[in-house]
Amino acid sequence: MDTTAEHRNGAVEREMGTRQRGLVDDCLEEGQFESAIDLLKQLRSSNYKPSISHLHQLIYLSLQPLPTSAADKFSETSNSEIPSSPSKSTKKHLPSAVAIQSAQRLLMSFAVTNSPSTLAQALPSYEKDGSGIVDYGDSVIGAEAACIPNARHCWDILMEGFTQRQRRMLPTPKGKGKNRTHTFEEPFQTEGRAVVGENSWSVLDWLLLVFEQDELQTEARGLGQYSPQLLRQIPSPRNGTGARWDTEAPLRIIFNCLEQAEVRHRQMGARLMTLLINLSSTVHLDLPMFVASVFIRLSASGAEQLSALFSVVPPSLAFHRFKVSLCPRFLVDTANGGQSRVDDRPKVQARAQPRVFRSARDPAATGDMTIMSTSDSSGPLSHYSKHPLPEYNEIQHLMEMQISASSTNFVTPPLLLKIKFELFNSYAALQSGIPRIDRDSDWMDCLQDGSLSKTLDLAFDNQSGKKYRESLESIIGTYFEIQ
Image 1 (cartoon, rainbow, N blue to C red):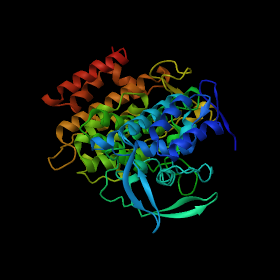
Image 2 (image 1 turned 120 degrees about the vertical axis):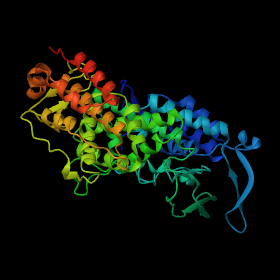
Image 3 (image 1 turned 135 degrees about the horizontal axis):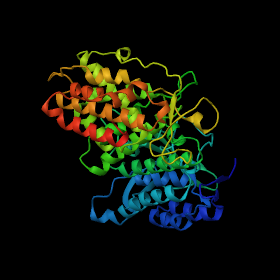
Image 4 (image 1 turned 180 degrees about the vertical axis):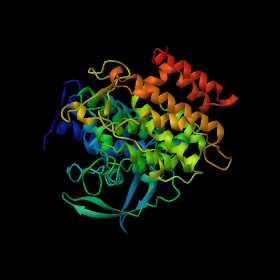
């Protein structure tokens, strides 16, 4: 197995030396978690990889509840005894609040110092790397930390009570007269548990930072604005070919975050949604299927989460494209009385030259809102999705369609106006990034012949829609010189 890896700053990450790792292991064997974490802090370097076993134990410690009693806040050892055999007992070591919080901070530090691919090796995923069984030595929490790699994917470890599952420990004598324990875990029941436990938010924050760093590195290499490590957390299609599409697990996390009262938690949902939206702008994630999954969840969860989603996710080309795909679903569904099927959505005609989106950070982009044309399937552009934009006449039809949103429907009249605004604004933003010669001819005509005003009049035909109409006229005027 290769023991080195090239890091983004040119440093080569090597395996931590046996002596250094042994010092940390000695502390973990004695339950001295604070000392082990302090050593890892001193050893942290872009030149050396943290070991997978140490990362597992840091994640495990980070997921633990903070002690509630004053005595336990600073003590790492409890006097309670857990029977392991008729003749022996094992002292249970509980991490202190200082150890738990230090583990959380150290994980975040590793996300800045070391490469995402190195850290992601410690995460469960659908793509096993074949590294085999992890050796935790005689660490007092090694058996418990083994639940981390045994999960299906990284979203599972965030679930409420994931590390507090019931275990049966039986001692098994092994080598040099030492006793080790075999741990048998009871089946983990997921029903009724929060998808992000009360003690899991710091680990979710760390996961997001790892994926965000991975996305930045991937884009810097000219391979597209997406995270390959996030892609590993989405299952491949059963036939093994084509784009991935099953985003159910991360979407559960996102919508749970959007329901939280704490702003920081809602922002985590926005960050994860941004990562998925960027991924959907590549060939690796099926955009229509992703949009359909979001539509189903939003339809079931209520109008508040749709408004929350639009407000918390930062604007970008990828988000504009996502909204141009999502908003028509709601308009058609409302027009059909909430009975629309997937096949009822507006049909998108194939364009002669599909556009693919380039990030503003891409050095090949010509501006902040650049959409490039390509007929070449090789090179960096091949990573960008070639899913075409709808024609303007389809957008115009949706905007001018008279829809009566009833009180029993998901889309209320105020939300209907908001959806139309988001759709038209995003379509205008995308068109503004296309070279003039490639813009939709009907769109260009509407800017010049005055029909844009008629469309906006029909779309926002009451006093409540006046503010949206005025905003769109102002925004579009900044994108284009309208005569």
